[in-house]
Image (tube, rainbow, N blue to C red; front, side):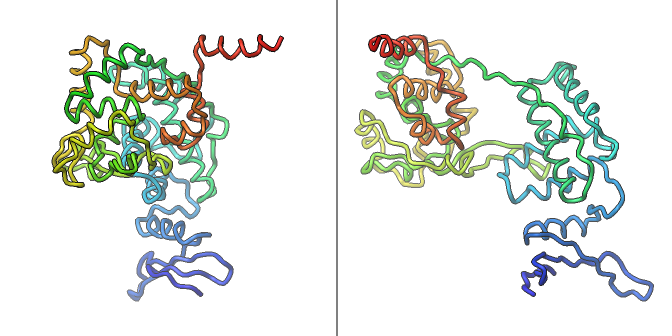
Length: 369
């Protein structure tokens, strides 16, 4: 039998077994019980649940107990921000309504009605939540119930639950005149203004820019190594301070990428990089970072000074993607530049050709007639 520590070993039948003390007998001796799984990680998670008396044997468990078990199973598989988001969604929208209910008492009708309630009056002051938020809540609930079915043979009523439909919000890109105005002014500005231009011509996210250090900028090879992102989340411990800043890897594995530096920015960046330590942040040119919220405020002021109508910082990224499509950049290359986890995301979000592009494409057809 193969041993891995923590009272876990691999059995001859290929399964992993974890032993734990479930109590004491009348003679004071420890009473041991075992949990089984098909992988070491699963067995370790089950062992943690069993030691907290959260692993059901035959009795039904509540939604709240299942959430705790599911969350422990996810902790080492997702980013800290995702983990915190799960807790926030559950505490804010699921706990009061479903937390005390037994999992085996739920059915598809109840869950669909729960989703409808969130859409109609699930937010603050009785206002309805957006379809995007409700979809995130129901996807998490579905994952919890699938976990309960797989691990504890509990009923899964989420199989027949429909998710609310969401529509991509219409994002207005910057036009050619606005892009040129941003380019002319930002090239003469400081690192904060250069970063706006960098996002406009590379598609970098605001969190990626805030985490960018001078060591990530390779002027010799003309690339930016995107390896991390910066964001603020609720404190996972629930203690003071209530929120903390986290610097972590980007959204997905494919978000870790190399992005070409626009040639017209090289000389300006080279001049700014003089006497900069590799560990200094690009935005501040110092060892201290700035947060996305603070940077968004400076960005808003920048647009106001140029008399350009305000759009969210993300619109810079959208403009970059839109211009790439117009210039005929293939979808796979664009997807890699944007750091999307799949080409489908790029297709769904950005590849919607405008009427002029459609006319150009059809003219090719007409020419053959």
